[in-house]
Image (cartoon, rainbow, N blue to C red):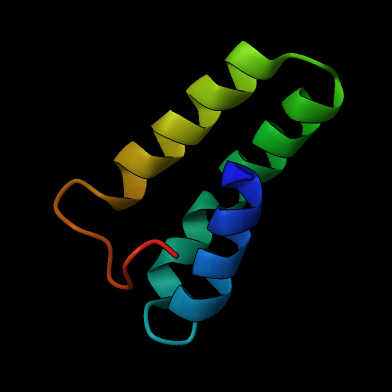
Length: 63
């Protein structure tokens, strides 16, 4: 569910803040971890990606 929400957030954010595209590789890795059944590592990767884009607040609120 979190990965789906992040995908929606990226779709909304990229036109307004193209700099957030830098987290796409991090999220691709999170999806790969999820598919491999490494759920704890996937969650850690998502949290890391959040930290990259939200040192303050996201440009577009998370959906």
